[in-house]
Length: 262
Image 1: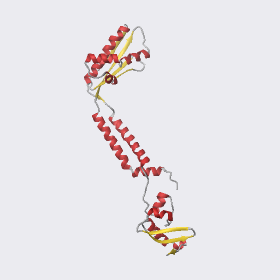
Image 2: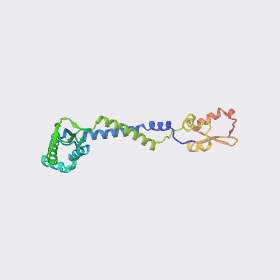
Image 3: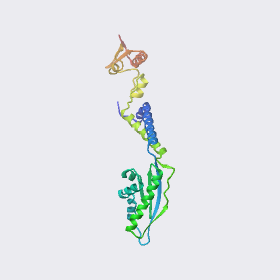
Image 4: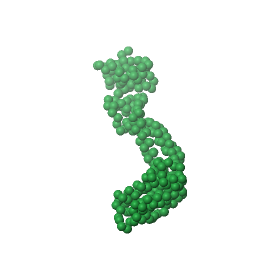
């Protein structure tokens, strides 16, 4: 018999153990909902500045250097000191993002903080420090604020709907994988149709002798049929596979050319 699982077998295993998949999905979604509700809320403030110099055109490399300056420890520590912030430098650094807008001399600065006013103040103070430090190095440097920072009422958080879909899909896949790895396709053989359906055997009411003991060891032997070298055991057990075999053999004795041996 070929024991290799088919796609149909895998589908049957998943359906049979669908409750396991559902439990994993429910637990994953529940954990995500708790996390999204309990996670820290960060308010976001944004500003855009223009770097100009009448005597020089700055390369992208230099503009990127300017942008990286907003994330340096010296600048952050200076801003923290001026604003009397209790946050450690590394925490503030994780919530500051500065980037050069493509094909331009604009730098976009975004800050997230648990307090919306603090987020705005960090941006304003950072730009002020940037001007003070770099105008000393580049006298012709001009920094123009294109978009003023604001203490937004809205807050930055993860896209709940998107991540909910991701959680459901990933947990469903995980559940199916677990079921296919640890699940079994064990079935109860109750009649000859089940033998053909699950085992791929056509029994015609006859059960090979080496199968009977494993099916029902405690049943009473009723008759023994012998034709050529084929030995069959019929065990009396109402409603069992063996009992059905007995009845089918009794109705087909002439066809099978078998005789009852008392």
